[in-house]
Image (cartoon, rainbow, N blue to C red; front, side):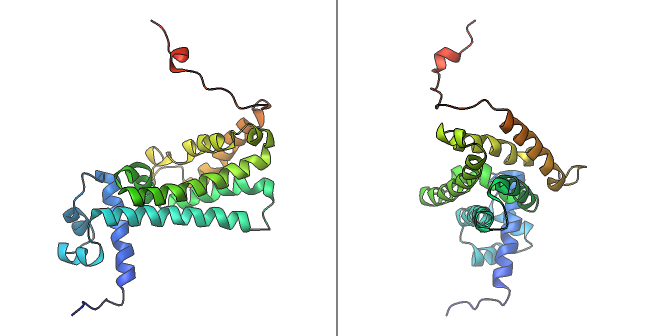
Length: 216
């Protein structure tokens, strides 16, 4: 006879993901066992397996839930007709940082542990991440059509994510700075740099490794 689901089944599943994300963020995916997750969630190991069959399923759920929220955020900005097209990038930056502030552990897991996912799940999540990058790249293209013409708008978006995605490595939740207060600084730094970029006419050719290596 199948086990009856408790009335708070979905809430418990979400609570487990929060606990698992915390453990993965602190100990690393490989360094965390199902026993660790069960202990962190104040559950028996048997109870934990009632909700998630293994660590892979936990990792997939954490990563997919987080990246799905990011995709939803991008699409909500794109579809909001009250936001002028030229303001979308600033709105995206600010809203993403606010989202990250409430999901630092999940974001760290998404950033650092996707490589451990089964191939099919990893590709699903990478496809969702491409949607997010495209949203930012499209917003950049509105401000700098020449950058898009040079096929560099996605590269510029990735440079921006270099600032956004790694804040968890130094921005502490209990520090004097918060994600909300850092957002204007990120915008100021990025937009001043964007406005100061030279006019683009064509995509630059990549240099070979030998051409850039410093000789002894």
